[in-house]
Amino acid sequence: MTEAAGGAAGDAAGEASADAGGRTSPLGRRSRHDRPVDERAEALKERVYATFTGLAIVLVQQTNVEHITAARATLTLLVGIVAISAAGFVADVIAHLAVHAAFPDRAELGRMLRTAGSAVGSASVPLLVLALAALGVFELEGALRAASIVYLVTLGLLGYVAVRRTRVAWWKQLLALGALVALGLAVVGLQQLAHGH
Image (cartoon, one colour):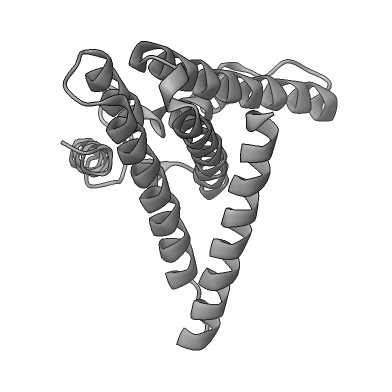
């Protein structure tokens, strides 16, 4: 099952557990759509950021494929994504301390952890592909190519869905999508320069 399908299945299960009043089940499961808009936006932002980071890591490894092993490539991606997710979590805690002059409460910490977890989740398919290469199922070069394609498709779909949700004319949506693609390519180029040297 793909990550997107897994997320949709999780959403359906969360929605099914809600009673007629829209409340969650006694198990406390909620779908992503039950979360506040700000929390969903924050999680999406972290996921996009982690996707860009993962793509940059994979592309840099692709240029050095003859010098690394599949296990090393998998570990590098895992550490990179966990590090960027942890940095986002720490940034949330610091921002909360600075703004509220208090530590986050349990609910706020839970929100921050869910946001960080969504960033880690962005690497699940690429990590699986690289792990299969480490087990000898795929060649590393092909696994890195597949991982980069997964990341590019993910970014493209996120941009497409975001633009389609706007209520502007189709040609403005097309221009916005083109601008997002150009900006995305610039970000990937800059990250490759930073990671490659």
